[in-house]
Image 1 (cartoon, helix red, strand yellow):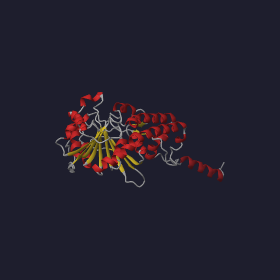
Image 2 (spheres, helix red, strand yellow):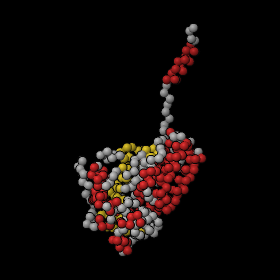
Image 3 (tube, one colour):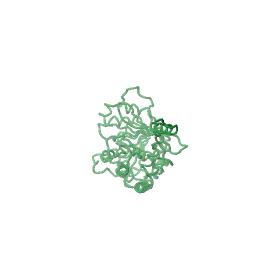
Image 4 (cartoon, helix red, strand yellow):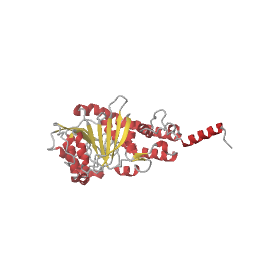
Length: 369
């Protein structure tokens, strides 16, 4: 029996509809993801909007907000004021910041150097990844958010990361490595993430590049994180890192809670690189030993806070010459930092080179350090 025209048209319509591709809804943006992880409101129309209305997410947001307020009051706000009062007049407007042994600690670097165009963070922790939260079920999402709170809690309470805990905490859930922490810190610091992309300085070293800005009319800034072994053996086998970093010289360097590794002979390449390529170095006592500045300057050194020795774990690194320098006079420091994070026990030292280091870039493949 011959089909009627209406029936034929209906059949053609159903066949066409069945073969048509269903349009894919846009996924969350890196900025949405960073704000979502941090307990901040996402953009209207984001696929993460619905999650933010759930009781479990609201608990996460409240917990993160409470921790951030304490960090802001105890550290972030005071560090910003210190930077404007003590650092900016002495170092001007550096074009880049080197932060070796940083792990995912962007937030302290951002507090002290809020305006540098380029941040270069280097650590042993994995770069990681973020599964778009809208792709996760409730159980996986809650596990990821809980782990993120745990991973950032030490820094937001005491101002530094514990490396051995990071290696475990950062690999447990769908928000892996340092990437979700750095993105979260950018959002908490008021930044807007514009883009995220893989990056390598060469030699097979893994990394990530994050573009952000402080507000819609602010210039773009960049955060590089590179996973690398900074020991002499590590740099000998993969020299591309320091060759690439030299392109940003002269830069300012920052060292904090660095396990006193630069006191050891097997970190001589990293030590030489910082002394040769930095126009200024801000550090606590776990960074470069005071004695290394002798004969590598001239440096103008200003001491802040109080040198109260080291934790028992690091007592072999006590510096009598640094203790004497602090007894001769130091400027006040109104926030805690480093391993001796309690107010009144912390120290910072700012060394400013009186003659800028050479800007010459190394030839391709060169390994000067």
